[in-house]
Image (cartoon, rainbow, N blue to C red; front, top):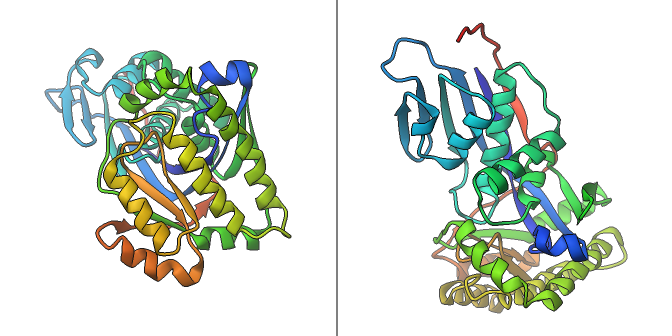
Length: 331
């Protein structure tokens, strides 16, 4: 039996520049972190006592006799590609899917890592990220960028750079105390809505061809944000104000990114004392992230009384196998 634990991510700046249609021409970068909310994938070979050969449990349950029968596109394609058969797999998560935290990519990374481990093979973090990108973008033909798979695999607080030659993952050099202070000023709220990010990304990709100027500004903000974090003479409040600016830029890219309800929640939090914030992920729903001075956090929480507040801590490890029980198995 194999159990993998893979973190979710929150992206602060540069989202949209991780689409190959943009970074192949202009370059791109994101500033993001993983945090202590995870998905768990358990995989083992299915004993030959059942009338079905593969048993899958996620938000649905599937009992099938061939990979072609599997309804879940990512599972079906991954099992075909990696030659997986006769397994029992379960998926569990600390947070809901389709919520702007890269949950589908975290699942893809964790599933692929579990499959390799079940075969007795080791795959490093870059291999896992690359394979998850290939699975989601090529085999499943899902629209979107490539930051989520990289963040989930590598973990930590990073600047991820993109170019036509590939990507690099660079940890942000920030003192533990300053990082803790940033964490303490960030508040995460569930808006109560969720949509498939791929559906939103399709509209976003079409809009991006006409929004190069906005995306170049969002790209430049990654530099600005990194300078704020690494220069201890600069107040972290500037990071919060920059979040507000990037959210306004992002909203202008596509009409599907925000909704009237999300805008209303954002304004309530800002009036209560938040210095800035943004909707995480592709848009349309999910989680709102705010930078809030400590003395204003109670007021912001009260202003969003109808929304679920989710405390969190940054994490640094990325995906990992948390249980490895090798087994003898003959096809």
